[in-house]
Image (tube, rainbow, N blue to C red):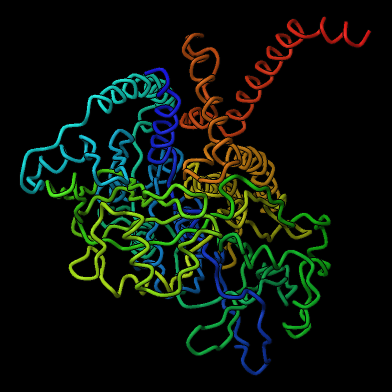
Length: 633
């Protein structure tokens, strides 16, 4: 039993973090490699000379952009918002992007402000339950775990013969695993209780469903709400690409004409139009065009009819050098490639050969292991939970860029490779679980790569007179691999905090000044920047070290790193237990307490690290110092 303990620990902690802490393959993954973002050459004849006006222009209609529009268009702000999105089907299901979000406590700080959105989240999403994890062994002669059989039996989906019981060795492992599971669960539940009642529940939801909820609320509001909505509005321009963001060509301060202009191109007609506003919000992903426009770019000036950039404008000449340059750091998950196979609803997983076929259940997280164990051929199929058992089930395929599967260029060879890697599954050409069309689609999909942990020191920029500004939120400000499950949640928090910062700022260009709102926009943005940048830096540190080995990377250094990471987490969990909670647990566990900022999480983690380092140094000195001195003398 003792010899099996490290392996049990590795599997358990990794499996828990996949479901609880990770919106795995989620928000950070929504930033797949896009088409070239280079600014096209613009002919003056193609530009619409009419300048449209709005209070706020938001670039990007993903969850963070739409959440920002909801926040700023509702009381107490009531701004007129325009959301610009290049994808005409941003809220439609994309088979190549089967992404799910885990909207946790931090993300629900936004949804709970709008009860209708939170109700829809609970209605369409599925409550996260990290106990419902099924690790399917690659060897088809090994029986399926009890959880797979129990879930299937409850809905009469076990075909012929009784369930095959696990061997005595497996039962022994299960007992040890359950004991460790109980200990870690108590630590996690303790952190959740400290966060209040809303900390107890997070929800998995497919990206397109969550985007549709936010989009509908932007355009229609709460149909149950008979109260006056206020004077704000939201207009969503789908199928329009942001070409550039520039200082306004108008300098009419007396009438408060917008201080920034966004050039947008209709993706169908290729015509160019302009929007003028007082506030630009960049929510357009980690390859943000808005952020790019704030960096000196001489080529950019040539392509826009000699219009000056923010760096060159007399009204925006307060940009520190390199403020908006991106800082990036590599994590063990950086560079992993992800593609998605679309499985049928409730597809079957065979149990021990010729005994059973067990249908999958949407509420359970499945990880199907391959029989290959090499550094370039190990594979695992991951299935995150979905509420609707009648829709297709995305299967996530993750591997290093040099993985054997990415080298295959023929659908039939691809199918044969998967059949060899997963002999338990029926991937045969006839009557297989996946069609020929799906193999071909998977092969053609580019997929996505996990990004570096990256952020920019520039969160916001305001004009000299502080009446106009540009601000970054979501992936445009910070992005990282999805293993800590905070991608969409940190973006939603950005929207909430921006709303708080702008509560007393008046930037309307369509209404008279509100006497109750006298704070300058520039001061409000500066407040947002100071506070959000501190959180962003702490968040990036957590992303680098929080849980980067949950994908079971098979390289030798990855395996060593995972063991060291597991030892670190276990040590802190034990210290937390024996100190009756005085010593905090590992940062990835501590981050589940929504009452703690990421700065507080990392500060507490750093204090434990310092204490452990001091203790180890003292022990080494006691053990070896005299010997070293004697050798030296």
